[in-house]
Image (tube, rainbow, N blue to C red):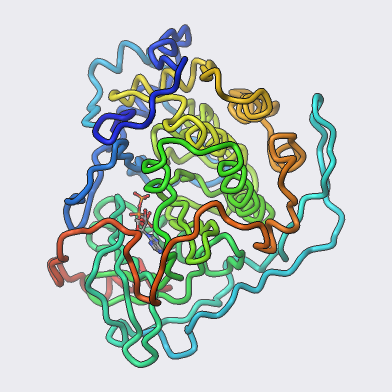
Length: 451
Ligand SMILES: Nc1ncnc2c1ncn2[C@@H]1O[C@H](COP(=O)(O)OP(=O)(O)OP(=O)(O)O)[C@@H](O)[C@H]1O
């Protein structure tokens, strides 16, 4: 982990000096909470072989069960700097799954828009119909109906394969989680959350979950295949994006986040690695492993270090604003080529996040700067959220309704020659099937009855 740690390095911004961010006068009571984190990624299938990403980001989480929306962990106040010294910083589906379109419908209902002091509201946010999230509307499928062997993605918890229905020939992305690992790492609740939250989601910029399955070793999620791969790879290739390119991806991502929030879902894991690109070049959000239905606040520490909001680090309880913070980090990273708070040392990342200081290269436009500053506000009550984002001048060139209708031409359209074409993905070593420990049926039923 780090900023531009290995080749190819992102283009160096002209006035950006990360070391400037180091001054931090805040002492916070979070170190024990952070010290308890397992920051080493658990990767199934080995590390990526062909290309090493310049910023290899990992997901972190507290491996204790989520205490629930209103319950709060009590953690003693500890000097962050002092404690950081002792931290461990190592660093088949049935035929009917076939490629249904997304059921997006414009919602004409009036919206409750809040105003921003500097910028006036100009747009009514477009949205898609709010679904009955969490309902049993994904099917169970038989894993023996699916063929899969090529890995297209490796995360901290799961391995994602290119998969094909043996009968229909339709391609999907198949996310496979090792049951034993999920249980050992106390991720049962997150795995079930992922399944339940994702089940009801229908949005053009969110990968569709078509079905779930399990055998005696693995849990499976059958997903819409995003042929274009990770936005992250595209960003690393380009170094940084132009304003127009960044507004396009930010706009589509903001629409997806807004949709989730309208369904009381906090995503809690936004990062370019999970923003995928469809065959047509549009955003497809994936990975709902940290997503949760939250009506007020939740307290579990999870996410990616560079993208964590201050209230998550401070264990103050967090809700939808965490996603707008991460969105600010995302916009910055697209425009600059690296996140605003980064370091080889996770504790330094946290200190920079808490410092409340963001340094901008001179080429960042004043509108972009204003938006990012509004999103990276430590005070959640002052942080911009959807209404302020949708009416912000940085997005002036975008027509939100056309964007939602996927009528705005994407900046890059992947070259895909056939349905199973995965040329936009990195190459991973061949997976070793059946290497995980089988789990007793009673334990499976007790933990994963819904899969
Ligand atoms: N629907 C999809 N289509 C194509 N590729 C996908 C899809 N879903 C996931 N991937 C690829 O697999 C990678 C890992 O998937 P995912 O992020 O869901 O795993 P995870 O273990 O939950 O990861 P994390 O470390 O972010 O928690 C993604 O970053 C992406 O490259």
